[in-house]
Image 1: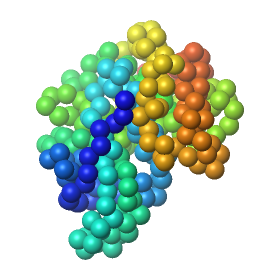
Image 2: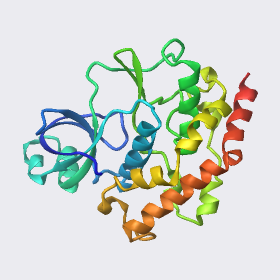
Image 3: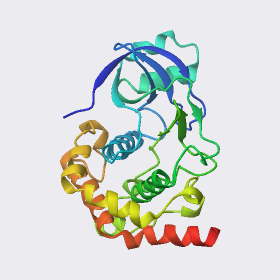
Image 4: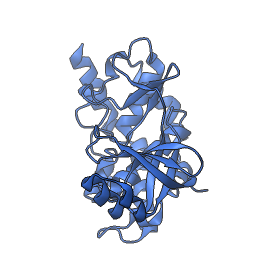
Length: 259
């Protein structure tokens, strides 16, 4: 199994809300995608986090737009008048990450009435598991489209991979600033969410989603072998599922303190 691959045909416009300068791109399948570029300042680890976290969320039943690999020819930069965009496209020749564009979608501002308590609890649990620090009231990364909430932008998750250490230490790291999660105030029982979702996060499932990441995005100075890198992600996430007291309890404490 692999992510679907499309070829970029036209760069439409930059989306300057993101720090990595993602762009809206039309592809050869007639689809339009929000693309995160391998040559952006956040680097390839942001693309790895997008794939692993986004595809894990999809398999847990959470609403995540389709993720694809977007193949980019550096000659596309020749048609862009903006020097910053030109440089980014030239630095991103090859495979990049795309997420299906949801036309007409709006950013979620008030979760009440759109996100029910059960879904909110599952999202909070999922973000705590994957250490997604980018779902705060300042930047919810939740879109409303056709009356449903959609989860986007997981490039800041799995932050343990920025400084690899022993898997058991990475697995035990708490979820940073849980009290700032935009859905914490409307979330239902987190233990119920854990009981429903944790059994689904098997080693086999984690192996499946890590295999979706292209080899060239995984290699770095610490883990130069893609297979070793994949196993490291599997080990950390599997251990976190087995030890919810290390990260889920802190979320409960933060919610109690906010009441």
